[in-house]
Image (cartoon, rainbow over all chains, first blue to last red; front, side):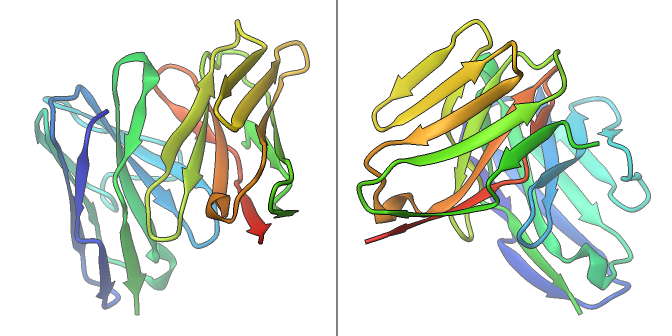
Length: 113
Length: 110
């Protein structure tokens, strides 16, 4: 399965600022996914990022708040903009391999103060 | 809209016992049902998965039982070990989109 490197692993940010999270995959993949996992909760899909097209956002998530870039088949970034304490979560990127083998990064633990 | 309901939320099992986690789904378009194991500070890791044309799949101590007519599936962990203590998530896939259950925090006592 693919190996995902996600950076940073954790950060503490001031409210009103933005944080960009990077996701690097060791192989070319068509689809990359960004999830949010609030403390003690399950995973919720934020958006799907395909190379060469705009990301597709799920209900409740908007591009102005969570802009995504996908410049090539091995890399994507998620920015959490104008952060508030409610954005404190773990953010995870994921890729899907052949036969639906989804692989997840280790996540970025974000705390907004 | 919670399309995958998972129970129990937490589970305590003695070492050597059987851990059972249940999931029920609503979306009949799901064509793949994985289970993920997540340790603190780590991302979810695929544990075992099943497709709806199979009623059971076993890999080592882990077994998925699948009931398509009831739209339910379960994870059985045999001979549970303290190292199995983690959070477990079931999920359903439709159209390259995973929908997760709420998670079960398993603690295996030595």
